[in-house]
Length: 355
Figure 1 (cartoon, rainbow, N blue to C red):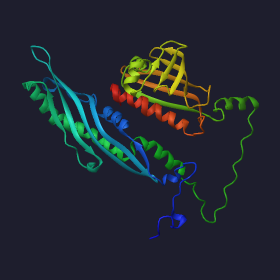
Figure 2 (figure 1 turned 180 degrees about the horizontal axis):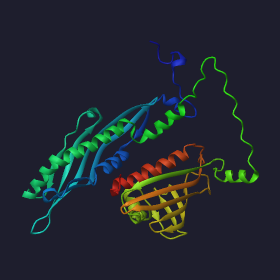
Figure 3 (figure 1 turned 135 degrees about the vertical axis):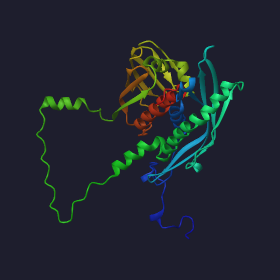
Figure 4 (figure 1 turned 180 degrees about the vertical axis):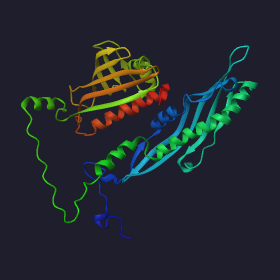
């Protein structure tokens, strides 16, 4: 074995001045705890266990607690998930009788959910909050017989999602797609005929096409997100600074007036409201503090409620710079990830609007 520093240089992965992780040769680790919180909340909250059978209604309420760690290691396209979690899920039951409706609440606890036991169902404990009344015992037994299999099935979905890369799944698939080589020509085959260039567009057509393109050095971010809530509810969350503080665990100042200013994530993001329509539209001038001075992007959040209790948000953010003022070229990627993971997924997890 060669001594340290004396190995064949063809096999040594050297540090690069630009910090690039070439071909993901080095380990790339993604923290998945907040993603796990949002994912488990969307899978487990609001499940109907019994819907009036035997006069009993039983459903899960919310993911009350999630502790531990979750991450995904990726090296050369290989996914290695790691997680050790404990979670508590609240449930409630209601029974109708001649004397009126009686209610009872409880909790389902998974004390240990870990990657090392991914092929086994975790232990699930069911408890009742309050006195052990006949209704409480009946609801507990019903949750063990009907609710436990349902909860474990949803947990298996989470385990499968982690095995595929969790929040890094889309990133991995895009890399695989872009890495696919062009099909090689068969030996001895004639070279493909040169594709004829289309005729040059007329000046008016050229101008129209150019309008759809981003300015050089800028990009546009677009995404569509679905929530199980009323449009006015999620509009209120996005425009209420106290709720922002709650789901982001950071300071926020938000004006609810057109022309008013806002500051998010302890001042990292600032801007001005350009147009506000309650439950329908939020349009803002929006920037990170690390962007070049005086540079603002335009954000439009359009709210659509195709059916009661279901809201679709269409986000379009234009004029996002490809580099910040320090020369970092991850601005677009980080901005898009921030919307998805630090805002939309956290809203789902904290307020129970998950899918």
